[in-house]
Structure formats: structure tokens, C-alpha cells
Amino acid sequence: MNTFTDLRHAERITTVKPLPAWAYLSPELLELEYERVILPSWQFVCHQNEVPAAGDYVTLDLWRDSVIVMRGSDGRLRAFQNACRHRGARLLDGNGHCARHITCPYHAWSYEFEGQLARVPAERTFQSLDKLSLGLREFELETFLGLVFVRIAGGGPSLNSVLGELAGELAPFGIEDMVPAPAARPVEQWNCNWKVALDNYLDNYHVPYGHPGLHRLMDNDLACTMNPHGVSWSRSTIRERASPNWSERAYQGLARRAFSGLPQSIRSTWMFCFMPVNIGFDVYPDGMNIFQVLPTGPATTEVRLPLYHRRDASRETRGVRYLARRINAQINHEDKLLCERVQGGLAGHGYAAGPLSDWEMPVKDMHDRLRSACPVLDCLQRPAEGSLRSINERMLADQAASARDRSAEKSAITRSGEQDSIGSPML
Image (cartoon, rainbow, N blue to C red; front, side):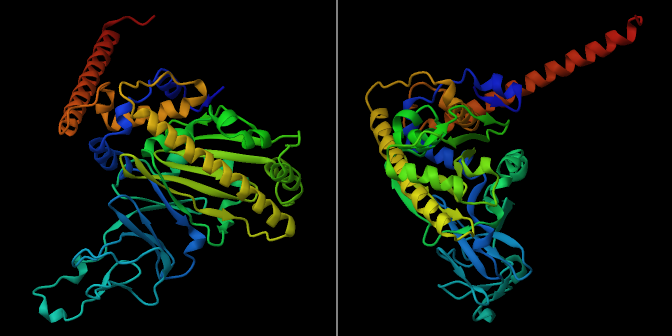
């Protein structure tokens, strides 16, 4: 069964109900989720080894926001809004290297790698131009085991406090030293709401039925461990019984012999990890991939699937990587088809979701977090068009008032207890 690192967390989410079907169909809700859920969350951008030198950069495009992660001349990584301070033109695309400055393609305003405005053509034509105040807007940036994350709407717990004990679980895989696989930054478009793809990733319950190849290959742990921040992880171990499928059977044999520098237990292990609100880490002996779900519309989703691998280039290692890619491509294809089938069913008139299994505990936790950010999700029926935001604001205000009342009541009880203790004889 599921393991929780905090019992109060377990008590809170055990009885959580699934989200209503309208939550996967509403354009108004998506606007609210983007503001209150996506922007305040940590988002994966790249591996630190993708930006090793000053001027190296990688961009991340969210729905309406774009971010640059760049290595400065001082060796530090920084995250900037991907927009010129003059007229808002997008500065950089994809990933690459800037030779001397970040230069806007529109009017050639130029910025240092550390974000300061360096040069303005025809500067004399601007009245009282304060270049010091016109550097690129900077966002929060943290790394975890070499993985680089940014947060656009600042505040909240640090990345490393959120991920916590997961660092120890993943340490033996050597993620810090991994490098991007050649031409392996795929982005897919799925015809489903972003939460459908998210629910699917969090749901171990479907593995034996939706992924027969994975189930033949691995002895899958359908439960998980979860910390109070909603970070969850589970382990799957290569089965002793040989799979009837040739690629799965070959992987079972090769993986146990390759990677002699790793502990034997790691050579046979896949780990599936999740960090709210939309990022999965699939970690294998040969490497890892990220599963990052980004909304593009109420029924469309962009799925980022960057892949990283160990520097080991032996023949056996190359064989394991090839087989793992074949297996994972099939798993990903199955997930895409399943999610699109779910999206079609949710749109049916009068559809209502059924109960969730204990093997879907991370789904419950995520739905609880979404409701905390957007309490309008407690409405069983879809709010009238144009009313969703005002209803949500009213519910947030009611929550805040209730929290203040509870705090005041608790304080009153505490003061009463202190007075009683002062007047009571010691026993």
C-alpha cells in the first residue's frame, strides 16, 4: 500500500473525490489554472550540462510566457523573461549560444549574459533613458541533481525543500553527470486537457491493463511513497521471468550486465517520480526522461519529453538505450491514445466520474491541491459562462474568513487554558 512521510497528509487526501467532468472542458477554468497553478509552480527547463559555457542558453515556452535560462560570464545560471524591455519582442528561440550579448532582433537592444542592458542604438534619441532600470526581468531559478527549474510567479517553498528526500532516492543513478541524448528534445501535441495527461501519469492503476509490455517487463509497484508536498515515487524491478516480446526480453538480459559501476539493485530498477504540478521524472539505469505537461487549450496539451543518458558509451550500454527507447515509445503512444479516449468520454452529456482506487492516491492528492488553488472546482455543475472567476474569488474569500475564525478560536482556547492553569493547584 501507499507510504506517506506525513500521516496528517495521508488523512487529508484519503477521502478526496475526483474532479467534476466540466473541469476538463472549461476555457475559463484553464485561464484560472494558468494563473493560480502553473505560474506559481516550479517548471523544468533543462539539464545544467546543456548550458556549460558562458552565453549558452535554453528557452522554455509555457502557454503565454517564455523563459531564457543562460549561463553568465560569472558561471552562474540565471532565468530571464524572454522579452526585450523596449517593445516586448521575443529575444531567443530553442537553445544555443550567444557570442557576446543577447541582442533583440527588432531594434538591436543588447543585454549582458547577466541581464543588464548593455547597448541601445541611437541612445541619444531617448529622453532620460535609465539603462540600469531596464535589465531583463529575472525569475527564480534552482537546480536539483543537475536539473534546472524556474518559477515565474515567485514565493512559496524552495525546490529542494519540496523534493526533499527524493534526492537520496535518486542519488545512485548519477543524474548530475548525465548529458542530453542526441536530438532528443521531443515535444508532442495531445488532444486532451492537461489534467487528463497529468491524471494518467499519476495513475498506477492502469499499468497492468494499459501497458501490457511494461507489465511483462517489470514487476511494477502500483503503490507509491508520497511526501507532504505531493512529491511521489515508486519503483519497478525487472522481472526474472523472460518476456515473450523480443525487445523486452533482450532488455531484461542486457540491463543486468551493463553499467557495472552501478549497484546491482539499480541495474534492475526503473523509478517513476512526480513533482506537482505537472512534472514526472522517469529514471532508468541508462538515463532518464522528463514528462512535462503544459496546457495549450482546454482540450489540447503540449508534452515535453527531453531525454538524458549516462556518458557510458559501451556496446552493451548502447544496446540498452536502444531497447529502452523502443519500449518507452510504445508506452508513450499507449498513454496518448488512452488520454484522448478519456477526453472524448468526459465530454459526454451528464457524465460523472466514479471513485478513485488506493493505487490512484497521487491523483487524489493532485485534485486536492487543484481545489485549494481553485475552490470553484468544488462546484459539481459547470458555472455559468463568465461567472467562474467571480465565484472562485468569493470562495477564496470565504476560505480566508473561515481560516481567520479558526485561528481566533484556537487562540481563545489557548488563552483560556493558560488562565485556568494559573489558578489551578499543582497536582
